[in-house]
Image 1 (cartoon, one colour):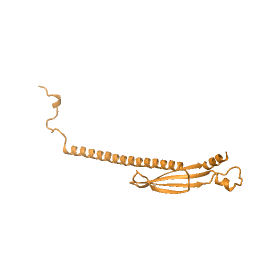
Image 2: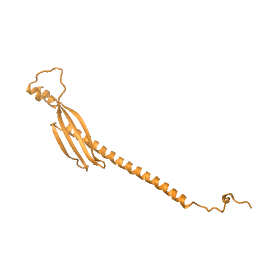
Image 3: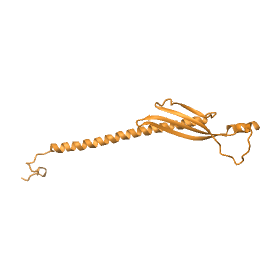
Image 4: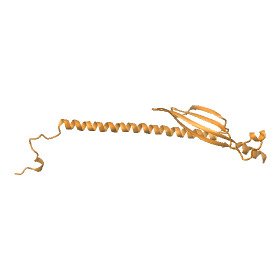
Length: 157
């Protein structure tokens, strides 16, 4: 009777894997899993950092918009912590800037100088803690205040 193909092995060799082969396979599996877990941890840290930076950017934009909408701009600095956002602090700095020179270098009266438009530089800076230390996000805008000019025109009508 012919021998089946599945049983055509030499019957003198034991079937299965050796202990060395199993240990080698486990070592390769362990190294692979360690690398995958390290990549996953690094990715999660990176995502958390990006999320915190996005929150800082959003807060800086909001603070800058609130400052521009404020009724009257006054040079100076405001500082504090952001409500509802643990670990975030802000600083808003408002400075008056010189307007570019006009083509006519006329001598202005005191009343004209009081009603002249003003240029402000407003900087919103948000700081927050991260694993690598303190991070800073800052936005700056220029704001041209023409409200005094509009008031003057309205009173002249």
